[in-house]
Each structure stands twice: as C-alpha cells, then as structure tokens.
Length: 222
Ligand code: HEC
Image (tube, rainbow, N blue to C red; front, top):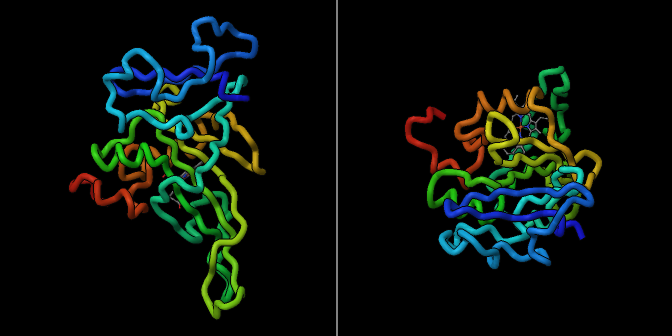
C-alpha cells in the first residue's frame, strides 16, 4: 500500500535518492508499479549488485513525509548492544539499586546491505539506517539463577543517513509508543549535537559497536 508513494533513484555513484509524493501528486513519470531497486533503469546498471539495497532495506516515507517503520529489522545486522547506558542530562538517570537490573538493553541494528558496504569501504552509504531498539531487562525465568535477559522490547529510534536532512548528513526519528511512522526530530535537538561531537565516526557511536569498530581509522582516538 504505502510503497507506491516512493520512487527510488539510484545514480551511477550508487547513491540513493528518495522522493516522497504528496497525496494526489503527479506520478506520471513513475513506473506503474513499485519495482524492486534491482529492476529500476538508468544508472543502476553501473552500480554493482552489492551496492544496490534490497527493496525492504530502503528507507520509505509516507505521503506526509514521515519515515515508515521498516519491517523485518530484527533480522538486520546487530552491530552492538549495551545495558543501562545512560546519557540523560536532565537528571533522568536513576542510580542502580542493589539487586535491580542495571537498566534497559539497547540493541543497535543496521541494514545488511549497508553493513556489507561499510565492511568493504569503511563508510556508511547514503540511505543507511541505524535502529536503536530497547528491551526490558528481566530476571528470574527458569532455568536462569542469575543475570538478566532481554524481555519485551520495541524499536525506539532510527538514525538515517541522507545529506538533505540536516547539516550533519543524518536525521533522527523517534518511534515512541509503537508508532508506524515518524517525522524527523528537529535539528536543534540535543540528539544531533551529542552525536556530532561524541561519535568516533560519521555521527555514529562506532566505538561502542564490536561489529564495526575494527574499521575505525587508527588515529580516531577512541
Ligand atoms: C549525550 C549523548 C547522546 C544524546 C543526547 C543522544 N544520544 Fe543517541 N547515542 C548515544 C550513545 C552513547 C549511543 C551508543 C549506543 C547506545 O545507546 O547503546 C547512541 C546511539 C544511538 C543510536 C544508534 C545508532 C548510532 O547513531 O550510534 C540511535 C538511533 C540514537 N542514538 C538516537 C538518538 C536520538 C533520537 C536522540 C535524541 C532524542 C539521541 N540519540 C540523543 C548518545 C547520545
């Protein structure tokens, strides 16, 4: 249903540009049906097959320009996880009580397509999406005698690489309450400043992700 509002253009550089159509807008130039990226015409033939994102890994937008929550992200590459990592500046940090879980698990996923590109080049391609999913830390389920496991969870936030979104080259989207789609968090939010200043590579906390950080340049300092 919603895929028909999106056109995917892949340039000879392998960059992905996405155009969301306004409701009722002209689609006269569009192909009649949403075709998989691999069958679009134009410069695609010049892009290597590996560089072309599978259609289910492409960021999609609805008619209101909101990013649609991707399907199947649980099977993407999980690049790292943390538990109880807190960086709230507003005093929201709760000290860990003895015997209580240290906080929620954070799992970070990215598209398999983008992961392969990063492993080959050390760079994130346009259209990369990172997903931050949060899970309750639970105890006391048989047969565990100690420790915490991941209980109920949800997709909390997406970090999308697209140069027209923000001067950082990325946009943040929050999917609170299980939203199906989200508009971009405004560029003044502290999401952007912390990620610009504190990340080891290209606004992404690569220093915390075991599946990526061996690719950090040797002089990155983290
Ligand atoms: C004070 C610093 C700080 C602020 C502010 C911040 N983050 Fe992050 N963010 C982190 C750290 C540290 C990680 C590492 C992974 C983790 O949290 O487990 C991270 C990871 C992420 C990731 C996973 C991909 C990546 O880029 O590494 C997303 C998505 C994300 N944050 C979204 C947000 C959003 C949305 C906001 C604003 C509402 C935000 N962050 C604000 C520090 C920050």
